Length: 597
Image (cartoon, rainbow, N blue to C red; front, side, top):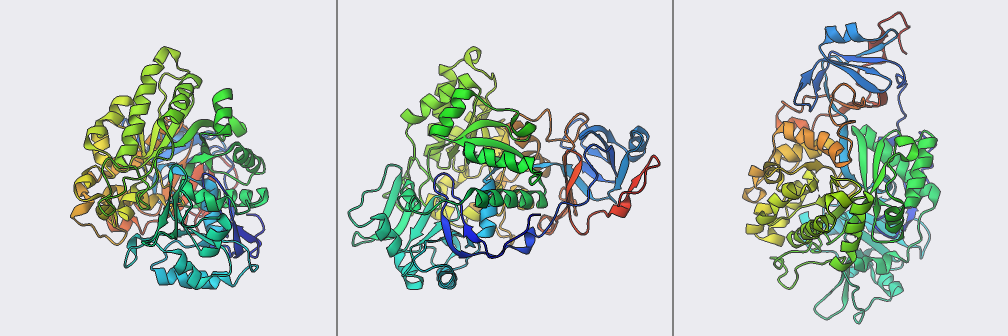
């Protein structure tokens, strides 16, 4: 772990677009005061035995032990057979009966922003408007007078009343500094009066295409800016330095392996950030596997389309083969594009942040160049538009003209679907890249936004799987906490973290635990064209494992959330070990080598 300066200036990143400075200083959570453990080197043959293995492989669903040679699995089976098959000089970790899963994959997250969430004015979990104002008052006393103050993480959906904050609320807490507080989903922000003044936003300001400036009954801006309108303020905030962004990327990766992730799929960034990540790999500061998509449309996406995918970047650690597009906004901020108006805002049906005329040429070029497309689509109208565009592109570029016959294009989120569109995912071969935790948070406010009828197609994992679609699970961190155990619990329980569910939560969309495991492992690998290499525990595959304190495949649902990660193993190397993990005294030679200490 690098030296930590607890008085370093805090900054925050917000994809896509500006990376604003935060006023004041930050304190690093104890969560990140960890180092990589003294580990068995990846080149050393290794046995993991006496384990409770769930392999996610249909041919051999369970096992007791594995053998690892040069970072790959060479044997999966019984303890006695593993000991006989181990090469000379192999070392052994006695797992003492704990549960081992295939290395888990977060199919949708924002790596740098995960780190920056931990380093900045984090408003996650703010329980009321008054608490938000109190936190802002305290924060406004830090830093330099007149500096921009930026925070992120508030969600009004569980406040009483569940109303957006306003510029006047922020003014009451901090009127002498420009303040910008971004909603947790990144699709809306609230700014105080000084920030709006600096941005030149008043009652006569028109919203940009794909954005909205909310106004009160008198026609004055409330301070809420939705989707593309956010950049009117965010563009004014100074970007972080490369060193600050690199630190955030490193902390995001450390947090991810601590939570049991062995791969994170970055849902949009820049080639500049790709270069930063490569340097971190070269310096040994990141162990987490990554898979990358470049934001588009824009110059970086044009570059990728021109040069083609990079499948072996950073020494095979960072494939760059995707373009991340957007079609609409988020449900919570009423930016998701709906086929019919919002039930709680009949004058609005959401926003389209890109046009079909802009996106379609990108899609056809991507097919010819072998570029994977993953598009943010949340509302039923946004999803239908993208399914239509994908289908048109597939027809316009037949298989013989494609660089990759099976493009494995994705829709990110796929939250609200018309029942008629659900079978189209499987039929078109479009992957539904979904985040189960969105359901257990959004369904506190989704009934108000959508009304009861549209909820039947909301967060419809089971229906998608039944129709033959691939569903890859992720977290959308830092929008959500980024914990795989919460995602697994949400997929199988579809209840709040407190165990609550009502008739609006459509419990028939819960999935079996074996399905949830594949959503977090093999399906994520498939979504990255890596299902032959990882995603299940099988001979020949990369030796990636997530080791847990509890058997989440059998324990009561509530106990899933009390389980924790004991070890994260990537390529046969223990990259994280909890204090109660199988101790180094349990790691011994089986061929005369000294015990590993």
